[in-house]
Image (cartoon, rainbow, N blue to C red):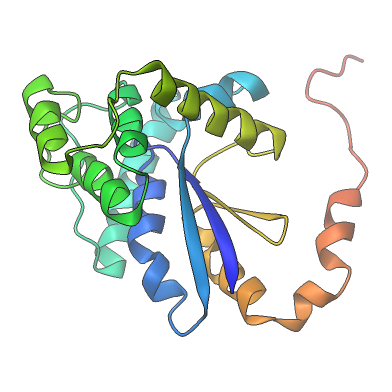
Length: 211
C-alpha cells in the first residue's frame, strides 16, 4: 500500500477541492494518506512569491475558477466572508485534533462551506469544542509541529498547496489528481524517463536580464 503525504493550508481553495475529490479520484486504488497542515505563507516567503490573492486580477480569476471547479465536480463550496485570512488557529487546531481526515475535513469545511467568516472567534471556539482536540492548539508543542511540517515541505521543494507526495514525487494542485492516480496505478509513463528529463530543459533569458 502506498502512502500519500497530503500537504495543505486551509487558506487554499484548491486544497479544499483536492481534499474533497481525493477519494473519488483514487477510487479502486490501495493507498493511505498522511495529512500535513502547513503554513502556505511560509512557502511563499521561502520562494519569494506572492500568493494568488495578493495579485488583484489573479485573485478575481482564482475565486471564479474555484467556484466553477466546485460546481463542475459537484463539491459544495462557498467563498468565506473574507479572504485571505489568518489560518494559524485552524491549522493548529487540525494538528491538535490529530490531523486525521475527520479533523482536516472539519477545518476545511469550516472555511469553504457556508460563506461565514473563517476567523470569527465564536465560530473557532465552536469548532474546537466539536473536535475536542487531545492537545491544546495554543501549546508550543502544536506550534512547533506546524513549523516542522512547513520546514519539511520546503525541504521537499514544495512551493504551493495542495501538494501530494508519493514515491518521492511531488504532485501539485487540484488538477494533478489524475496524474497522481497514474502514479499509484502504475501508468507506464512513470516508468520511463519523462519525469526526470522534463526538468532538464535549459533556462532561457532570465526575467531580470538587461541588455
